[in-house]
Structure formats: structure tokens, C-alpha cells
Image 1 (cartoon, rainbow, N blue to C red):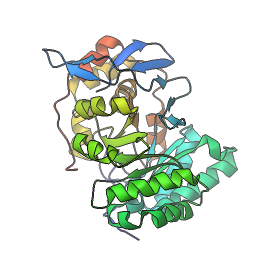
Image 2 (image 1 turned 45 degrees about the vertical axis):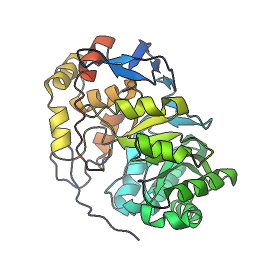
Image 3 (image 1 turned 90 degrees about the horizontal axis):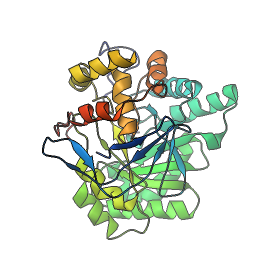
Length: 332
């Protein structure tokens, strides 16, 4: 099993048992239950995002889902499990499903897929949740791209599932085309419902599309208030690919501290009676980004999901959109 450093850093105190983990298209017509998103965007002379002409993937705020180009509905907010141990991942997933979240994100390299599967089964048993109500995402790690067919089966085995809702390539790497084609075979075999990529950018997407048949349903990249991924979102809009944000709150340490203390964010939090974290997540959703904040803290998970009882106005979204500075907090 692959290992990574598992420091447990909480988003408020930056060092607790659970920990903050992982975790553009612009607001248009703003109804309470449905936000229409725009795929192609550009900047005006003041640096603010303005809508283009291509409409793609409206987020439904009543069902809390988006229709993917694969034909499946995906929840627009969920729990990330990066840097959680197997036991922590089990409890985090269990608590997330208890709050009403239905999107679970894990990966081979996290080493906690068994725990994620255990949390899913516990929640199904205790709360009567059906498997088809839960959307599970995992990822293939780069060193295993050459044997991706076998890796698909291993993901199913570790999770204890009959199918995976979304499988992503974790990064670009040698054999990534081969691995994506293996995922296409997984779709044909009924093992996978949707497939996509993570940490891919314009040139990577173009290279991929020259050799594959199924368009990526999701692109999961570092996307947040200071790095709004406008260019790549415009690039994937014609494919019907939805952006999913890891580091939706800015990541650990400096990133989340910087974003949550931004004066525009804190001002809007006061206006709406919400926390800065909830404003950041609500911005993600209204900007058309699926968000997967992570935590091992049950109260923080509940807080992260409690973003559907308020709405940022078009003017407020414009103030937040204007904060984009193409500043990343990770190196990939």
C-alpha cells in the first residue's frame, strides 16, 4: 500500500485529530433552487469575469446535483478524505452521509479506500441510505497506469463496491492515455459509470482527446477564490466537462488562513450570518465548481454542508470573482 505523510491539520487550529484536507464559470440567472453556469468566460477591463456564450451543466440547488455529460447526476458538494487514516476516513464518511452529503472522494494514493467503504456500509445500515444515492469517486495513481485494468478491479475490491461512480486519473504521467483507455473499458464493462481526470490542463486535455472516445465527465483541479481556473474551465466547456475543486477552501495552513481572512469574504460572512468557510464554499457552487472540503471533525462537516440556506447576489459574486489572482497553494 502506498503511503503519504498523514499530518492531521485542522482548518481552524491547524493541528487536531481530524484535519482540514483537500480540498471561472460565472453566476448568471440566480434562482433560489437553480444556478445557471456559463462555460466560456473572459475578463473585462477591470479584471472581473464576464460570461461568454457557451452554457454548460447547470447546477440544481434543489437536488444539490449536476448532470454530467455521462448522463449521471453528481452531488455538487461532498467530503474529501485526503490525509485521513483508514479509521478516520471511515468515521468522516459516516458523519458526512449522516449530515446529508452524498459525494465521497478518495484515491488509491490516500491508502484509505477500505475505510471509505466501511463508512459507506455503516451509514447505509444505520440510516437506510441506498447505494444508488451515494456517489463515490476514487483515482488511479500514476505509477500504476501501465496496469490500469487490474487497478480498476482493485479499487472495487478495496471499496467493497460493485461499481464506482467516478474514476479519475490522478495526474498526468507516462501511460496516462493507456490508463484512460482502460477506464473506458471499465465503463463498457459496467464497473465504472463516469470517468475523468485530475491535475490536467489545456495541453493535457487536448493530448488526451486525440486518443480517447469518452469525454471526461469531471476535471478535478486546485480551484479556489485566488485561483479560479478560468482558462481551463473555458477550455473544457465544449466537452461538457465539469470542474471539481480540490483545495476548495485554499488547502491547509497558509491557503485557508489567507482566504478565510480576506476582508471581502469576512464581510459577506457577517452580512449572511455565515462563517467565512461557508461563504467560500457557496462561492464555489455558484461559480459552477463541485466542492469536496475535507475534515475529520463532525461539526465542521456539518458546517460545510450547511450552505444551501443562503445565496450570494450577482453583485457579491462579482466582488468575489474580482479576487482571482492565479495564486496556487500547491505545486501540481
